[in-house]
Amino acid sequence: MTTAQILDQTLIRLDQRSYKAYKDIAGNYQFPGFRLMIDHVQGDPFAAPSRLRIQIPQTEAAFPPMLYQSPSRAVALRDYLNRQFERAAHQIQAKRGSGKSGLIEIARPTQQVLERSAVWITDQQVEVRFAVGLPARGRTILGRQAAELLCEDLPEIVDRALKYESLDAAAILRQVQTVEDADWLRQQLADHNLVAFIPNGAILPRQSGVKDSPLVDAIPFQSPDSLRVEFDRPNQGKISGMGIPQGITLIVGGGYHGKSTLLKAISLGVYNHVPGDGREQVVTDSTAVKIRAEDGRSVVSVDISPFINHLPQNRSTIAFSTENASGSTSQATNIMEALEVGAKVLLVDEDTSATNFMIRDRRMQALIAKDKEPITPLIDKIRQLYLDHQISTILVMGGSGDYFDVADTVIAMTEFTPENVTAYAKAIAAAYPTDRQKEGGETFGNLPSRMPMFQRLEAPRLQLSLQSGQQPKRWEDADPTRNPRIKVRDVDELVFGAEAIDLSAIEQIVETGQLRAIGAAITQLQAEFDGQRTLVDLLTALMERITAESLDSLTFYSQGDLTLFRSFELAAVINRLRSLQINQIGRI
Image (cartoon, rainbow, N blue to C red):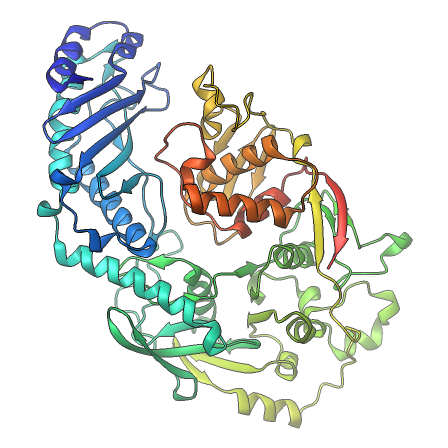
């Protein structure tokens, strides 16, 4: 290992040389109080930035062990340090040259507190992974500016963002306790027969559709008395708010009164949020999945027969496939795929649903006989889904009172304030019967179980197995997320091989780092596929490995741009691969 002084001298020596000469600085350098590790040097100023790591011994960082002693606390502290590093880098870094010169970049957190590979903390050290755009003018090295960047700016960022004595101890403790309490609250839901909890005082509206911070002057959430529950949290004491029971819950109300806003907060309650977000104690069953129609999506061998059957020309729906799904078939598919991987709560908004999948009123039943209608609407399956499989549904419904007949709980939103109107809705249903015929049969039907054929996906295969112990010959061979044929374009598109996968309908993907990790996970599954396991078995084994070995288990080298995903979103991406093939189909 060499020293910071040697790095400084080397960068000065490289001044005005060809950009490729930057390769000389790869290696490890000891700075006062930390170690700098330059793992990968970019070959061009316009290429992806160089990848670096900093390791600070706990003798210097000095974070109290109580701040990271549990998994919840460790994730919260790592998230906090990630944000502090990003803030300090933004304040200190300066534009130095062309292209991405002078850039200091770390994974950019959203409002969610998630496990990311950017920051790690143990009793021995803190490690931070980030990217740097090494300064150049055109393709000529700006060595002096690089020396300032690495030998002056980085130490200042370390001092500001990665040492306990330099940070707001109260803010750190607040984040750690908030996240730990949210995890605890989420764990209490099932024991209280709840699927979600929204605390009094929560701020649910957001600034805009593209800005996820809380809306200024928004009306704080206030639970109706009849749905109020109280918990005594481990850190921050008693909290009360609205508990949404298991079963079928309708959220009704006029337009612009907060129905979809409430459902959106519930859908993101599967994740924790930073203090001050307004939703930091909104928690939802961790298996909840947002469902919507998705015209045009690919479907591969999915059993949608509980909802769609008797297609023209006797086309089977037990293993339904199409390159261009309609609104109703796509929504049925999305439900069945979510159930296949273990969803216990479905979240549905009429605004993003296919009308003919949601309702079929008495007049339409009279006009079009059931034997001429392949679609069984959700209204005829939603209760069976709960009774047969214990799958709860939260449904925003402002256009059809037919659902009053099947609902367990009805919540009316008026100016963002909820009211329990279950008894009133049931009275209306009794006073104004619809006389519609039930078309769902006696039971919901079977849940799907499929065996995907990953080895046939059109994407680059890793040249080495994860167990081989050999070192990859090229960086792109070792790093699936850096493979030029696997790219992430914001949170709504993943390019995997020859396919650009539209993920705009997967609303619970919240960070690009999740997609990078999903791309790496699919590549790993593709490399390890043994032809003997179902999709659920594959996902379970993968998620267990990540839990045991961290996100680093997805790649050969240490990366800082991965974010933990749920198995539901991984399955959603796999299911949208147009090159996906199914080897075996089962029903459970």
